[in-house]
Image (tube, rainbow, N blue to C red; front, side, top):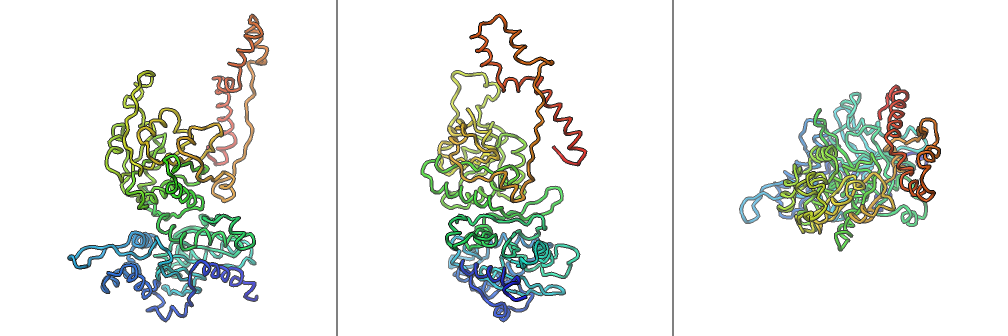
Length: 559
């Protein structure tokens, strides 16, 4: 088979060519081997040293050496722990002591310039060999930033059919020694700093991160901030899946954005197991669109909006990543973040997600009084609350008082308060929404919902603003993020003890005039009134239970 028709010609070469067009410089693996102290070395230490001096010109030679070792020689019990330690160092920097003329003090060392991607050394290398315990591994393509390997790409030929996916992911498994069958046959040290793993055959592409099993490799379908249409005009044809993924995930700007703002290490509170998570394309787009709107808008209502992402699309993590990015944005000046739900179990869920992912110091409002204390205090807090805590202090006791009701107090007029409300379509109606706006008149409101907003519903859109991003059930099913939904009509027949509604109505209201009977029908004989009748609800519930016990539970499914 000639190179034109194998993986090199159909996948690897086009991948490298595309990366070069993004600004990565291609360097031969042989050239780098001459720079390395041996094939066990995974970080290009000489290049990292140069980058450190450029980004931290005050750094002494001794501290340059310490910083290089912090990244190139991570000491942890497991691969995922080493990866977490390396990621923390890369994104937050490390503190090293040095005397800059004002005494020996601790100073932060940067490894990557995240704000100006072009200010980093960006390399793409083919066939980068790394020696493991017993064998070498040779990934097809490796991306380096300042000498640090951040992305491993495994290429296969599309001519082998569907086998390409399994073969490529199995190879990534061996490289990391994830399966016991590959013990000592890989080189997991390479993956201490790797952020993304991409498998591709030119005509299809999937991505994941360190420690990911095959079923969680996903496609990336949007070249954001480009549109598919604009990209098609640029390359004068429809972009293939490999190109869509590379534009959306591997341009220097997007790659460094993902590394810095879209990685979490979630701990299972029961097992202690650590799971590294990176975004799906709809999460990445929604967060960045929300950030752009918050920066661009002039008035509070112009700076917020609604994120409609269907159920199962990872809204809790989207909210987490938006919170992280809002906090990192210097323009927000140490913002206060308020996460609002309408149910205690959702409040529990989001709080646990934030805590499990290591989000710094989330505080949970335990009462109306506690919420007011937190919001009236200094900025910089992350507050979890239910929307009901924005009611008046009397709560249920005040419910019947319609006259002379006290106005909700102003808690803060700061403009760097961001409210992130879950299930916004159902929580923000009536007086509670008004109270939110009264309490925080200059806050920016982001609403998250899994349900499209009805065209007649003005409350949600007036509270938050227009749509920021949408991700429908059809998209989620096409992406394999959720199972298809099948509808079966099971509507119990509407009847009243064998007689039609019209006959019963005529008998009961025989003494009324035609005009009176029509008025009664208009007011009471509506579809909604009939559907809400207690006997009707009882019949529907019994039908649901019978159907579940006969057909759903016996097949091992849940409801």
